[in-house]
Image (cartoon, rainbow, N blue to C red; front, side, top):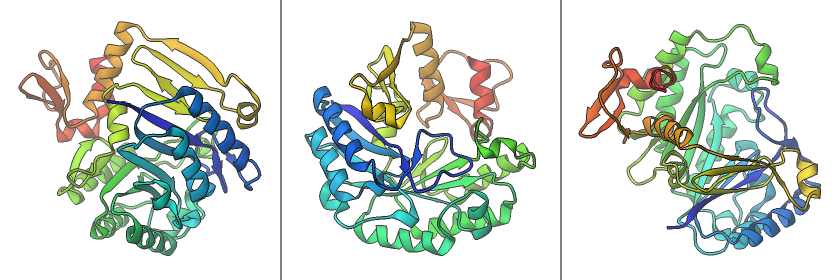
Length: 334
């Protein structure tokens, strides 16, 4: 069956103020060393890749030749090769011929004021141009959007959803804004009320009603679900390469050093390991399974959760109301 392979590319032109991912602002000087290091790491592991995902950071900053080198290092023919991109740094020349089959485009908003709030480097028109250019090369494009941004209105969010829906992308991923510890956004006090965020999420479910809502944050046209991410949610093994990347073999999780320079210098890049107990594995399967439309196998629905969970044979899944408060429902079950 093969495994999922993730390559973390830790380079961005600029860190967004809400971002807590492992990355550094890049002038390109470390790109060649990074590609050489990861290629060697991948070749030693000799993965049998079912899917390959370039995340970041901004993987497209590496350019098609470097992406192609990393794809060759993985070897074989993965069923799906995803590359994350940003509108302002989209470099399409040669990317498809290098082996990419799917793009994730970090549009995040179609309102210039909100894009400035989020610290993005592109404006709404650049986002539209980037999508049109990508659509000429790829039929499998995921559009990423963020809701719950300070200053965002329901009506503005609906307009964004309607416009994106009119593009007819193969996939849409929507994320509520989080205020991560250690980021500039952690200090923001004027946040969207929970009720407002819930209303925006419900508006998304309405606007994307003809898409397959196969995971809490993800919608797709039939057949365009993310195979790579689906494997995470199903608890399958995966291998991660690059600084901060995680791997999982079904019982043990390990992770690489997060500091980019340290990662490039070390021979052994593993920073830590953790063996999961059967109970930890059970809880993770519950957490990840309930996020999906297929749900999980479960006994009776606990009292008080009948409005949030529904049964389909042996399986239980979230109702529409349950999707809006999924974290609370899952916490109750755990």
